[in-house]
Image (cartoon, rainbow, N blue to C red; front, side):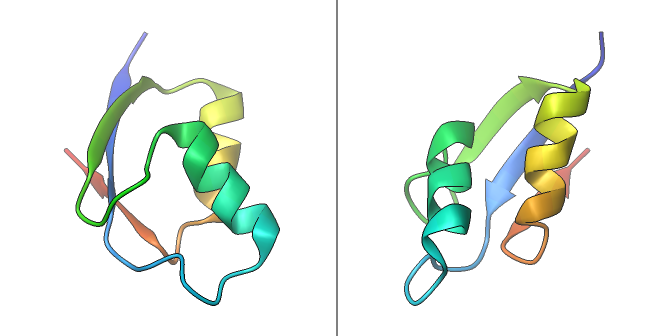
Amino acid sequence: METIKIQLVRSTIRRPQKQVRTLQALGLRKMNAVVEHEATPQILGMVETVKHLVKIID
């Protein structure tokens, strides 16, 4: 399965709790942190929820 790298580029301050929990579930807790996940439908859905806060790295 293909993997994707996700980087947190915007702060979680003043964000709805749902978005903060989604980022924590992805493993993104600090600014500019990068995590690698398999590109499953569940992970891609989580990324879609917070797409304005993260960047996908090739």
